[in-house]
Each structure stands twice: as structure tokens, then as C-alpha cells.
Image (cartoon, rainbow, N blue to C red; front, side, top):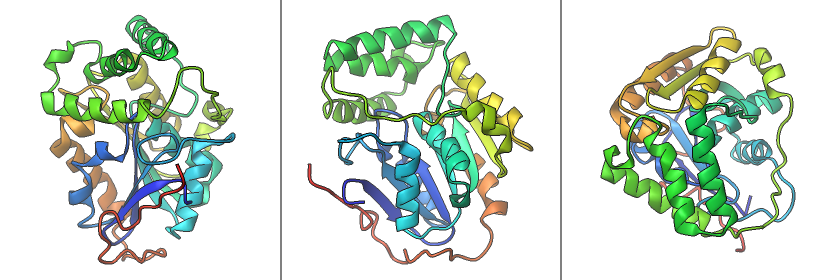
Length: 283
């Protein structure tokens, strides 16, 4: 695990917070202090993001997560993710079900997304064109379209939230170059297998997110037995950042009956400093 970074803090049952694409674990800064008072919170940077090393060989994000959870001896954990993080959570429930106690998704379904909404496809094309051209600032601004969503201008987004997202996106994007090989190996047949997920699933979407992102998360909630979906007004693709208090309340309401058993499951995180679980590899 020397090439990955993660935060491991708090005590109790394990809760894993999985960030979206092109950002890092800092997107959870409004959740971690509150949740770590009750749970063992683990927040990794995915390979190629934040403080984790870039890939040098083919990899699957779900396998990276599974290796980390086994390294930390968490036992079954609740996986909560936004966007890419949500897809990692679902793929892990499919590929490594012994490690998953429940799943919370926001703005995504599985690791096989699909896009048909006109606004979404235009925004993706703008963003991807900038990345293909090696235009860092254009790539950051293309990414930010999804932070505002299809129903608002970017100026309508809280400046503090926008600034945090820009900083994280710029830091991760600057680790990469146009034309570098894509070594990510996708998980296949995820939608066909999703009905077999046997743990509780909650979708928490920003009401201002794109129809495709909301639709995939709600489709997952409908597909899984007992799945539920909740919408948060006044937020788009990052509801945990735009409406953190409400998002935290919803998450804790979901977690409390699931994680009410005594701490254990291999956690030895008592008194862990928020960065004590960090692991760095050669860059």
C-alpha cells in the first residue's frame, strides 16, 4: 500500500468515504470531524488522485480499495461515495462483497456510467476537449460545469465550495499529461449484476445535478432490494459540500441502525491522529 494515501481517524465501526473523480479526500472535510466522533472513518485518495501515486500498470479502483481495507483489517465497512467514489463503492459490493456492509451513493450508479442528457453530453465534450489538448485551466473549468449543474451558472455556486473544488481538481489534473495511457481496467456487467447486491443501499442526490447522474443513482436504488433515494435541494453534483449539515444528518440517520454495534472489526484506530494512517510511496 506504499503508493496510496489515506486518512484513518476515529474509533468504532468502519465508514469509508470515497471521493469523486479529479478531486481527493479533502472533499469530505465537512464530514470527517463529525463522523469520526462516532465511527472509524477511512478516507483514501484514489490512485492517480490527490496524494496517491499515479498508476504504472493496469489496475482496478475496486481492487485498490479492497487491498486497503484488508490491509487495515476493517471487516465489512459502510462505503459512501460521490460520483467516481460512488461507482467504486458499488463495484466493490459486486467484486468484494465480504468487505461491504452497506453502500451510499451520490450522483452515480455503477462503474459503467452512461450519458444521454444533452446538457451533460455537451459539458463532457467541452471538458474532455480541454483535457485532450493539455489545457489545465480549461480542464479545471470544464470540470466545474458539473459543480454548478445544468440549472445554475457557476457564479451561483458558493465561492468557498467552488474554490475548494478548483484547488483539488487543479492539483490532481496537474499530476497527469495529455496523451498518457489510460491504465484503468473497468469492472464489467455491473448493471446486470446490481440486483444481486445484498446490503442496504441509499442514494443521496443533489436535486440540481444532471438528469443522468441523478438517474443512475436512482436506478441503482430501484434495482437493489430495499434501496432508497433521497434528494437534497440547493445542491448539484457535490451535495456533501454544498449542504453539509443536511447531508451529514441523512448519512447519520442511515448509519445509526447499521453501525450501532460495539466497535471492533479489527479497528485499532483509538486516538489516531487524522494523518496517522497516511502511506506514501515513491513518486
